[in-house]
Length: 252
Image (cartoon, rainbow, N blue to C red):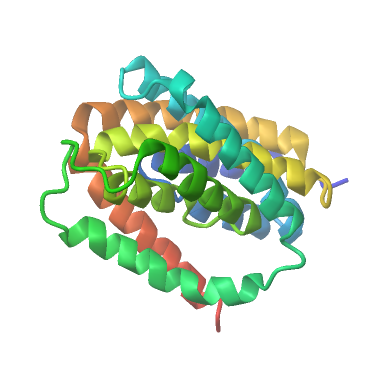
């Protein structure tokens, strides 16, 4: 049984609050919580499983808060959320049999590309644009694919969902952020289901961090609702770049 001292617990709770704040705005909260859990001495697989426990609370809170503000109709997202969940379960179950190391090598490039897209693409604001694919095609192809990735690896899932909603579905930045959260919540739950079969999450620690995630996500999503793209874009660029640099550092 892994025991956590009070001081360490407070640090992990603070990390979860910060992660919930960042994740509710642009994704990338795992960049904060996964290293924190591993630095606490928790084995990698168990740290990833525990991260799924606490992460789903932040995504859920953000989804509810954006819905309350009128930026997303969660009932219309039930179908895509189920597809995201199913993809994540499959990804988690196959994590030990697929060449995830090869995928990790390409992730920093993709994340830097996303950061550059949101930093320099002209006209990216809170206004909707022309959609490139139909909602049905988006929900049945892109959504389960990203859900599968979240179950398989996870880093950058929020940024990948954002990229899809903006570049394919034609959503404005704030609307895209709001629509990302329920799908990310579903993929977190799906990934957790898969992880439970192969690892033992630290449930009590995950729930304690989950409470902090709720608080951080509430603050972050409320602020994003008020400020919109002017806040979301820079946070997304910073989070994606930081995650890419972290992944590169793991090569050495």
